[in-house]
Image (cartoon, rainbow, N blue to C red; front, side, top):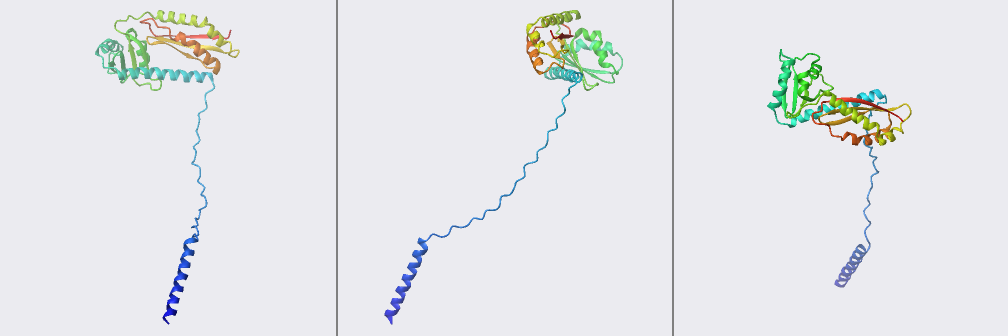
Length: 258
């Protein structure tokens, strides 16, 4: 009886050992991974750029060019005023002319910094800007005067002549511009640029001079190639030094195709 029990236990152990051997030797089935179907991600919305049509009318292009130039001139003196120190000396030079121009009422406020003065209209007449620019007393001490081209009642900024400089007569500015015009007309580089423009078109230059230098604005209508060529050829003329004390002046030059 005891022998039978022992044999049963041995048999049970053998079966269990065989089961364990099979369990450890046979690899378990790898776990299955369930992949979710790809979700389509919509492209981010794109906002179309609205481009303003470029002007093609030469007169409109000229108007926009003149407006941009006026903005730049106004911003230059406004920034110069803001970066300089207050100057009572400059104020004392300009204030008598303003009091003579508008003797009654509080029609203006004056502040000066360095050689730049700011005139702010207060209860000013409708043509206050023209009156200020045309006044002989103001012009006697002023090298340049600019107005905001987009705000009639915005302050005006005036660049005064240095105290030691004696302004040359207006004829001097005109003579200087005539000499620049003659040099441009005789330039072989400019002539080569004009040879490529279409028949019937011309190079129109608006020359301007004041104490800060010589600048120009080119009229529209030449085309990209001739315009770039002319701009490069005109660079040497724009670098010509302006005689000290030269008043502001302007001159329009028209160059035809040779």
